[in-house]
Image (cartoon, rainbow, N blue to C red; front, side, top):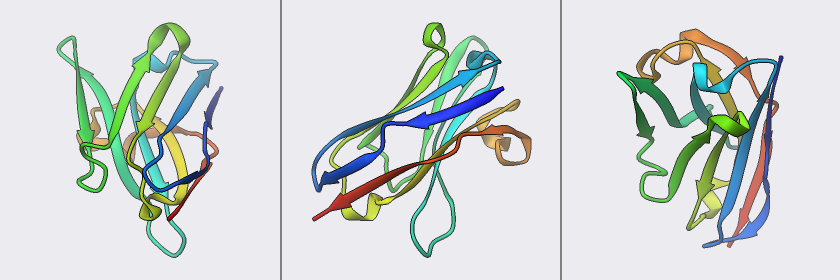
Length: 124
């Protein structure tokens, strides 16, 4: 059972990146998926989450990324993606994906798997 985050890198302010979160050993579609980030010297921040309620997907975004980041998932690829646009230096952080067997509203206490993290560095 593994959750692998990838796609990080070093970019310039205003650039875009697409992070991937790929599951092996379990079906990602059975879980809520969230992205977190931890910037140097700061607390971990939950930035986006997707869950499925009553047959449709619900998306949640932190104010810091709303309008710039888009979360999606492809169950056929057993993966979730975080499309990041208009990146800013303050987006510099290690980005992690995680899955929980709950809705996004109660994600934290119900996390069952974490990805290993991928570094995103945005220079001005």
